[in-house]
Image (cartoon, rainbow, N blue to C red; front, side, top):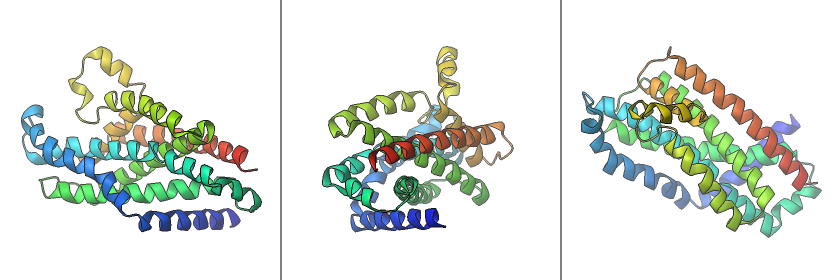
Amino acid sequence: MKFARDTWLIFQRQFLLLIRQPVWLFVGIFQPVMYLLLFAPLLKPALQASSNAEAYRIFVPGLLVLLAIFGGLFQGFGLIAELRAGVIERSRVTPVSRLALLLGRSLRDVVSLIAQAIIITLLALGFGLSVFIGDLLLAYLLLALIALMTSALSYGIALVVKSEDALAPLMNTIAQPVLLLSGILLPLTFAPGWLQGIADWNPFSWAVDGARALFAGDLGNDAVWQGLSVMTVITALAVAWAAREFARSVR
């Protein structure tokens, strides 16, 4: 009970800070909306899709995974600002659970991501996307796991490097190959065999395949459960490692 209460208190504080600066929500969805408006219309002829709905069922899941990855990976910058302001230092004298310090922040990031994903999905519906609500909710669960994992990873790395100058290039170095080897913008079925072989080692490519299967209404597809399983395991590992870094920094 204490752990749940501590997590809720941290989440409340972090969420209040977020809604006091709502511009970040709009900044976060600006790039995905631009992709949706300016890139997605090219997909139907490029993918030789039979309809706009088919093209958007391929593109929108990848776009949402992109939003979850990048939205989480760069959360560490805020934590470095808190370190510099002494917020983390003052946490040493409180009885708050060290794991709650991480999860409260990460859950705020998950809620923010889901809100942005709902906006993107609603916009895509106007362009011809169609998806069953049950499949959509399961896809959002997959996105939540990705956001939780990437934000926890970002917080943990931020506690290690303690510098924006080090965090920025490191996150970009991680994000670039993840983007290119996950089939986010275009399915990897169009890639040569050697590239597909490399992408098989990228856990986010499994998540993208699972999300696309859900948007296509193919709940029984192995990619759905493989993607959920892979992301659940990696998320648990990332949270455990980041929580350990919080415990080291706040004691």
